[in-house]
Amino acid sequence: MEQQNDRYSRHFSLSGFGKAGQEKLLKAKILVIGAGGLGCPVLQYLAAAGIGTIGIVDHDRISLSNLQRQTLYTTAEVGELKAVTASGKLKALNPEIAITAYTEEVTASNVWDLISGYDLVVDATDNFATRYLISDTCYLLQKPLVFGAVSRYEGQVAVFGYNDLGQYITYRDLFPEPPHPGEVQDCNVAGVLGVLPGMIGMMQANEAIKYIAGIGNRLTAQLLTFNMLTYETIILELSKSIDSEKLIPRNREELEKTDYQFLCGLSHPEIEALDPENFLSKIKTDEITAIDVREQGELPDAGFPHLHIPLSQLEDNLNEIPEKRIAFFCQGGTRSLKAAEIFIRNRKTPYQPSHLEGGILALTQKQNAKRD
Picture 1 (spheres, rainbow, N blue to C red):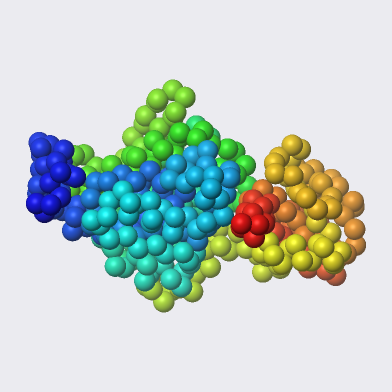
Picture 2: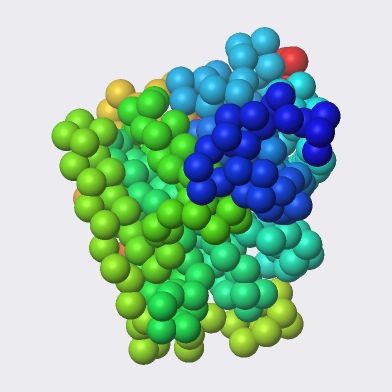
């Protein structure tokens, strides 16, 4: 480690950390799932600190709307894969560590193999289905998990793992079951102050470094909430829920058979999910009527013919929907699925409704990537 003295010299001289702490970081393997608003600061600080092996999981591409908070990327990189771009930036920052980019989407079929080779996992994702999937897998593999979430002006950080009583606390001990679709707005709908993910992501990186180095009072089995407008910080102790473990698959086989999208209300057996390419091809041929269920004024605009019936007014205006194949769309794909469920429940039709998976944001991103 002599050749690295200059790079990590401030750690070497740090009381309570020193060369022993740095050695632990250099030997550690950390998987960061999500290279967006939270993942960017997490990755930058872990790489700079000298985490020996870092895995980056993200199948998404950089979009213009990301740049308000995802500080690893530039305008010129819009359309590029986040994991690949982030990997290149981090290697330039610290060429002495190993970095692997995984450009696949995290699913029940691949999550076990992704996580099993790492010492600690950082959840920097932005949807409930993936959070439950990651947490359940970390529990089965007995891996510590550093969790983070943001919305509007407030963020959360927690470390899931063993508490002082020897109980493994999971995300399900905080939220045993997912909220109903539309009950909790994501950042696509609610928005987020650009600096907030930076603050929460740095806290996640800090917790990961503390955990690996064995220093400080870690947030294990605790939830920290932080408000950017007031700087109010609250730390809650998390306790083991009686029923939480009953909700977790018992082994890898059960995990791989669990449909987390369905459990979180993001899929429905009677509703066809259309990817952006399929959606565009169908509405261009007049095979499907597109219906925007967003509220007035939501951007980006849909650049194709469509009806506009906000979700809040849908049940009162079902008669406006023509008797043909229809496809609902919204900002991120959650409200459109809810709209299709309302349609099935209240309107008899021989046609199966569909919805745009990932919403208008996924469609816009797909179009931008093609132009690039």
